[in-house]
Image 1 (spheres, rainbow over the protein chains, first blue to last red):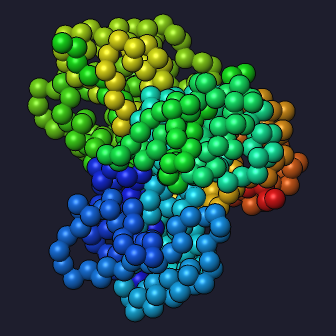
Image 2 (image 1 turned 90 degrees about the vertical axis):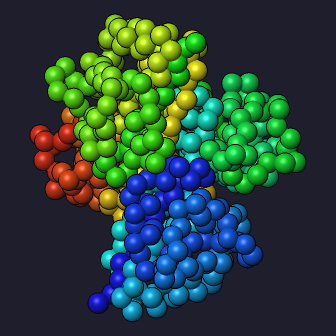
Image 3 (image 1 turned 30 degrees about the vertical axis):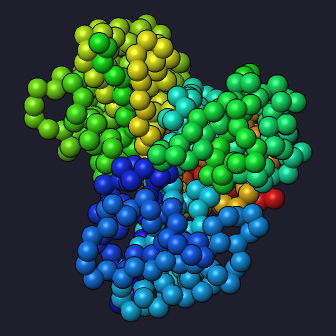
Length: 231
Length: 231
């Protein structure tokens, strides 16, 4: 009988923002896998490290391109899915750790698309980065009947401009090297002054800044700008 | 010295989707408050009930209007804030339990607005309902550079239509008695067939349906429709 595939959301960075369910299941599965950079272990592993138990669980770093810009090489995901598939077919339960939430801009989507048709798949939701950034900066993400929109920073400038013309609350994700483009746009649209910038939310390296305080040369991939256009 | 105010996200419903941090802090604070309906304890309390410890912690249900449609009576929030303020001024730490995430369409926003200027306030992010609904239905909420938008169901029909004209991924929240309006709109826009309906995500009463399977007369407030317009 095939094993079950588990997509386990581990939250934005603070190991204490793991859910009780994620903690239970990550230690219960036969194989624990996580997206990792070419060398080293990466953020997902860093988040759960304090919770890992010694035992005979197989640990399997999946060497995947973390950034979605440029889009991940399909081959790396094919290979990773093949590794997981072998273990699932052997009846082993496989947990895949996912930064934040597995279904929300996660690299898990590429594995889910390849494996969920063949194997029973369960997804454990996690705390997402917009919520962690909102908590960090005391920023009300959305309330009442306000629309809330998440816009990835790599989006085309004119598309971003068009979206931001509507009243509502916005989280601009994966800002990174797109910071200057976004800052200029928000200034033109008179939205920059109120905006809140957060990097590494919930980690010890967390920083909350106004846009003009940010050094555009040093904006990490895991950074976000929260902004609101009032009706 | 004043006590600290804690906004504690307790997740979408499953008591196991509480974070380790929420669990630690809800039991550590002197006063534990939660939004409750006119009678009974409500969902936030139900979620943490298995985790409550016997002790001398004061338990304080706040009788607040839960629905944001019609907008909550300001007086009820004034009175609740006054109750919390009295305890904070007496040096007590006060935790307020919040369904989902405190900064994401939560009733905590009304208390945060009234109290965070006078008292040190810490917010603990929680697992939000869109992520729980996505997990429940195996629905990829957003990936790559796709925009993601949350639209409250009570929004005006023509505003909803305008938003849904753009390519992207959508979560329609607080569907409840607006189900028929939304279903008709999605049918007109040829978006109904692919859409996923989820109610009571992560609770034992969770249901995942296609739109045509839903009885419009029995749609709870805590229901959501996930839909995608392809580019």
